[in-house]
Length: 238
Image (tube, rainbow, N blue to C red):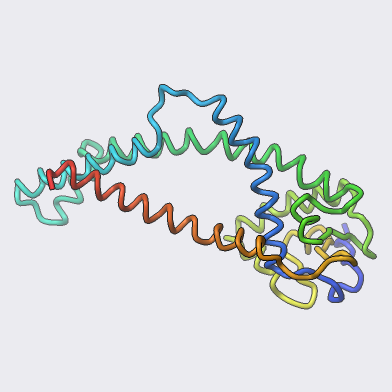
C-alpha cells in the first residue's frame, strides 16, 4: 500500500503547534462537557469520593508513621512495614487506586466514544474543522488542499493515539517547520492550515486556555500534597 500523498505546498499557510493546541483545548472542553454531565448523572453516591479516599490514605500513613516511631523502626524497616501486603498503608493505597480506576475508566471511555464522532465527522465536513479549529481560523486539509473525507479523517483521528502514546512527542512534531505536521498528520497525509480569512495568531483567550491547561495540573498536585500532609498530621495529632 503506497504512503498517503502529502498535502501540496505544506509550508505556505501551515499552522504551528500553539494555535493547534488552543483549538484542541476548546474541542476537549466541548467533548468533556457531556461526559461530565453523564458521569454526574450515573455516579453512585454510596461510593467514597476520591478526595475522601486520598485523605484516608494520608490518615493511614500518619498512623503507621506514629506506630513505627513508637517502635523505633529504621526508615527501611518503616517503609517495608508500610508497603507489605499485610501492612497498614497497603489497603488504603489499594482502595484509592481502585476508586481512581472506577472513576476514570467510564469518563475516558465516554470521551473516546464521543471523540470518535466529534473530531472526524467535523474535519470531514464542509468546514474541514472542528469548532475549536474554526474558532482559531484553522482547517484540516488532505492532498492538494482538499477536504480530507471521512476515511482519511478517521485515519487521522485514530492515528492521534500514537501521538499520545509517544508522550506527546507526536504532537510536538507540529512545532517543526516548514510543514508543522504532527505524527498523525504524517500517517494520514493531512495537515492543519490557516483559513484565508484567519488572523494567523493565537488570540488572548487562546493563550489563557493554554496557561490554564499548563497550570491546572500543578495546582492539583500541590493541593493533593497539602491534603495528604494535613491528613497525616491530623492522624499523628500534630
